[in-house]
Length: 484
Image (cartoon, rainbow, N blue to C red; front, side, top):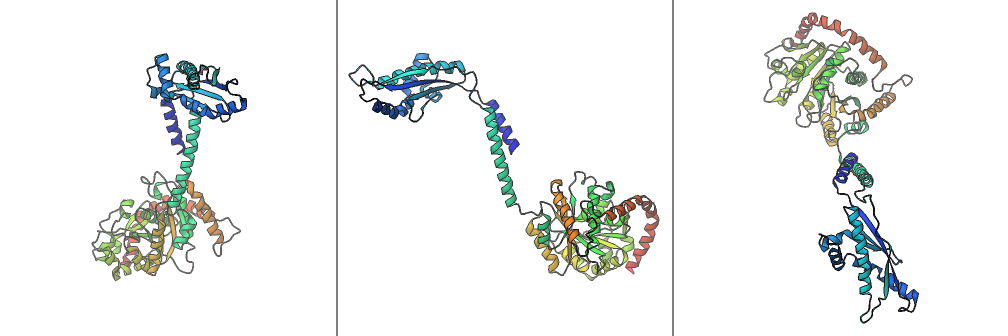
C-alpha cells in the first residue's frame, strides 16, 4: 500500500498542470473626520472585512477585470482564480490570483486589486456624498512568484506515504482479524489436541522436484523430514508404531508428497518401508514415483494378484510401493471389508513401517476407517489455507471412531513464519517427558545424532541402489508370505 500510494501520488503530481500565485495586500481604514471616534470606526471596518473579501469573487468585479484586461475567461472562470481573505481582528485584505502563467497571474492580481479598491470605495460612499466612509490603499503591489504553488510534490508524496502506510496497517489488521486459517504452532496444537511434528517449507522447485531423492541430502526439505522421522520415535515408546495413516482435513494440503517423502526418509535410515496408496478416489503415489498404477491394493483385495506380485520397488529410494490399482466405484465399502483389514495387518507384520496415503478426512470417511485399522494417524495441514474449524473437526473425526491422532505436519510454511516453528520444536523437545535438557535440543535441523545418521545413510545410498536390484527379488519373496 505504501509503494502504491507513492506511485499514484507521483503520477498524479506529474500530470497535474503547474499553478502560480501572485498576491497583493490592501489596507482598509476609516475617515476620522466623518467617524467621530477612531476606535469605533476601526471596529466598524473590522466587522466588514469579511464582506470586502467576498466582493473579490463577485461577478461585478470579475466583469470589470475582464473588460480592463480583455481576458478570455468568463466571470465564473475568473472568479475561481481569485481568492481574498482577511485575518481576524485585522484590516488587511489579501488578494491572490492563481494562474498557469506566473506573469499573467501578476497582471491579473495587480489590476484586480486596484479595481477592488475602487469598488469598495464606491460601495462605501453614501448617496449624495463625494467622499467614501472608508479608504482602501494597496500596501503591497502584486508580486511575481516564479515557483509554482502546486503541485507540491514533496507534500503530496509525504501525505500519500502516510495514507498508504495507514491503509496498509489497517488492511493487514482487518485481514488478520478476519483470517481464520491455521498458522501458529500453538494454535494448531490446541485445535488438533496433538503436537506439531514438523514444518515443511515452501520451495519453488517442489513441482519439478517433489521427491527427496531429487534434491541434495541436506536441503531444508530433507532436514524437515528427518526431524519428522526423529520425532516419530518418541510418539509412543510403549507401543510399536509400524503402520501410519497420512491424511489431511481437505484436499490440496500436500498429504501425498508428505507420505512419499516420509517413506523415503525412513528408508534412508535403513528401515524396510512400504507405502500403500489407499486413496482410492484420487490415487497419486504411483504417478509421483513413476510406477505402474494398474495393479495394487484393489487387485490384491479382489484376488487378481498376490501382494508379492502387486508390490513394486522404487529403485532410487528402495521404498516398496503398493499402488492403488484400478479405481473402484465404492472405495469406502472396500476399506471396511475384512479383506482390507487383514491385508493391512499382514503388511504391517512384514515391514518395519507401513505408510498409508489416505483421502482427506472431511469429504469422505475413508481415512477415519483406516485410522482404526492402523497404529495411528498423522495429519497434514497447509499453512495459511486450512481453516481452524476444518482442522478441529477433522481431528475430532479421527478420535470419534477410536483412532489415534499422533501429530500434525504443517506444510508449505513461508520463510518469514519458519522461525516460530523452530522455536516450537526447541520448546517441545526441552519439555518432553524424559528429555535430557543437558544436551542441545533440536532446532531447525533436528538432533545432531540424527543429522550424523542421515549423513551416513546418504553416503551408503549409492551402495544400497546397487544392491536394490538383487534384493528386490528376495523382498518380493518375503512379501509373498503375506498372501499365504
